[in-house]
Image (tube, rainbow, N blue to C red; front, side, top):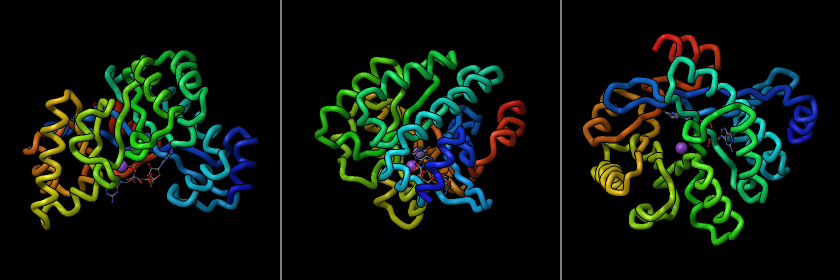
Length: 253
Ligand code: G
Ligand code: G
Ligand code: MN
Ligand code: NA
């Protein structure tokens, strides 16, 4: 699979594509943006799960060219959809391997320039562990990205080691609460308390909260009452193809 993906990279990223999942305002469920998610299809037509191929891209460092391609594509799509929804936000996942490269910020800046995109419309999703690492390159990269005025989101919050206290001081604009907490909302009082605490703490520090993995109306109603800013999940939509997203969620808005 790694060899196969290396060949795809050579052939102008043939076989790779992005799908998009809506991000909605928690109150009205209006579309405010999308998370871009990478997909890969083998030459024989087989679709491989990102859970399988992302680690291979990381281990082989192919994630560096592929990640840049993802950023470029997502930025171009964002620019296009902003003609319909001017404040559209495009979220892109960035791997730790990409962030460790000393020229990542320069590359991100070049993408914004080439695509004519304002930095405020692009959100880089980073997982919790990035903020914990005592790595000067990564710390430096985070500082420079903030300097570019790009938005940073902490993805999958709550599954790692960082405490709620630590969260308040992290230099992120958005915290995405991992779907684990929503799935056990009706089983465990503790998980409800956790989401509420994250929201309260973030709002005190002017951070936005996105709750991931909302699958039912009941879950949405609970989350809305907790005052989350945005939601994402199958209740709204699964990740969908670009054309579908455009016709159903952008042009129809
Ligand atoms: O798309 P799906 O929800 O199946 O994603 C599975 C995992 O793959 C998630 O953890 C998601 O963050 C990750 N992923 C999807 N697309 C990308 C991408 O473009 N870059 C990186 N680094 N991870 C991605
Ligand atoms: O780690 P990250 O949050 O980037 O992962 C995105 C992944 O979450 C994608 O694979 C997407 O398909 C999945 N996902 C998005 N919404 C839901 C949901 O409501 N339920 C479940 N089970 N998975 C979801
Ligand atoms: Mn994500
Ligand atoms: Na997540």
